[in-house]
Length: 496
Ligand SMILES: Nc1nc2c(c(=O)[nH]1)N[C@H]1C(S)=C(S)[C@@H](COP(=O)(O)O)O[C@H]1N2
Ligand SMILES: [Mo]
Image (cartoon, rainbow, N blue to C red; front, side, top):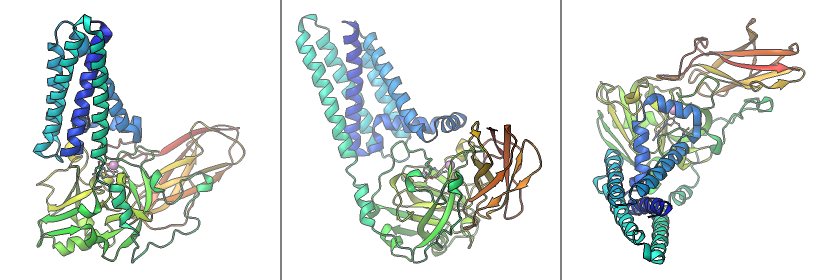
């Protein structure tokens, strides 16, 4: 068998396997698609430091990088399997079975998939073996070049059709339709309007409210859970006096409240971008918990997403009257975007997202920290993770050249107490005050700016914030793991 023919049998065998798996997955659970299941499982098994590196290096593209990487590896494996099978179909067959088994293992590992879901990787393995062996048989007979060509085309075409059909069936749950049907989520208690002067966007800070398209996104979901509002149910149970089962309509018919909240990710490095602000609309989480009646001794609110991700939030924090924790349904005047948790998510001001902000939330269990441990806790991150006071310089940009008077501007946050002061210092000199933007509330970020008269040449500017309780951001550089970075952001630039 020619080399390229052999390679092609391998590639088409794998393509057929993926397509068959994808098609069957559309019927038994979209994330059972072997490629996605393996990817999701790989994410769960990736050692913490590597995952942190991926978030640092690839940011919001981390998942794309993983998928592309997997595709490249799979292609290489397919080509190798084909080449190894030039004499006998056995190596390729063994490999197809092995890949099927990897898929089965991955699907069984996923917390969001039932037993039936193994049908998808099984179908993938069977289709891979059959198609590979069939093409191999055709290609092994030198006299039948045209039959073999037809076979190759047929396999490629059938795989494409099955893959597209799987994609079509898999997205047939009309989530966007469900989102549109939700209509306006008009708050009975709207957030106060954002005052003029709440940001220094003209000087290079972010605008006060982050548009939904620009809101940072961090989660472990390779394919976003697709839940329709009308099918969504939230169970509240565990150490409660009465269990609650809440449907979307139950929540949206309540008097909704709107709160302006800045969310922050624990994996944000000093100077990093993982913080954004929105007007969230929803139901006070505290009210729901009081209705259920939290029993004495329950210190953890353990929340679970539709895709099996979990977070553990201190009960004392979510029960604080002034905290303003929400079961959010909407964001910036529309139902939550699907990537941000539609139909419902938690938002708890003042806590990093990984211990509080469960998207696609379907289960709230009142329990203890002793009894259950959540997704990131199992991977070496902290148990209690209040947001640390932090400030960032947005302008000038690092290594840039500036002319004339220098405007230095940025953002600071210290939810839920708020920012009281931001100072800067130049070239290690004395700390100087900056002007703060108009305060909105303690659970939101605050912008700052200062004009400096600097001599031409190279300069370094550092900033530090002080929160409303009087704590000043420490200089000590600490990594994001396990409970948030500390240190002063500094920018190096030149004045011309
Ligand atoms: N279901 C689910 N919810 C999740 C996560 C996740 O991986 N899965 N990540 C959390 C983390 S670490 C953060 S910082 C916030 C980010 O929310 P956003 O993507 O809407 O900005 O969501 C939280 N909620
Ligand atoms: Mo996060």
